[in-house]
Length: 147
Image (cartoon, rainbow, N blue to C red; front, side, top):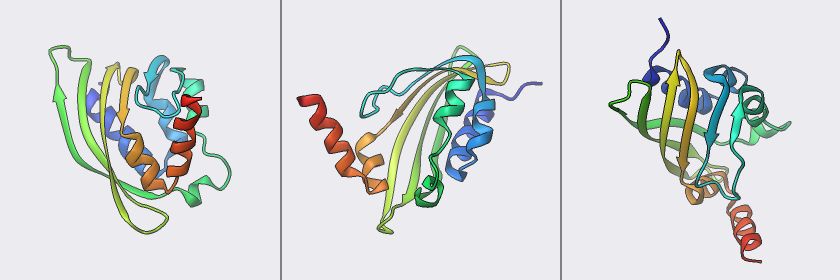
C-alpha cells in the first residue's frame, strides 16, 4: 500500500530538516507541479523529478553553512479529496549568529500513489532569509524588482 499524503508530507519536511537532499526527489512523481508562490526572488515551477533533484542539490559547502533546523507545530488538515492535504508547520532554525528563528509554512499537496504530483509551498521569505543570516540577499532581490 502506498504511503498516505500525511506520511509523504512528513517524510518531505523531516528530510529537508535533516538535510537528506538525495532522498527527497523520490517523494515526487516523475511529472509534478511544485510552486513557491511567496519565493523571493520569484521562482519558476518545478515540473518533474529531475528538476527537483537539481533543486535539492546543495552547492559545495552549503551543507556546512546551512542552519540547523527542526520541524515543529505540525497540523495536517485532511480534505474532501483523499489525495489533497493542507499542512501547517514551522521550521525552527539556529542561525549563523546562533539566534533562534521560526519560519512558518503552509503546504497544499496532492499525493497520488505515494508521490507528490502537485504542491504549493508557502514559506515566509522574510523569516527564512533572516534565519539564514541572508537578509541583505532578500533586500537586493526586492531592490531588483523595484528597478
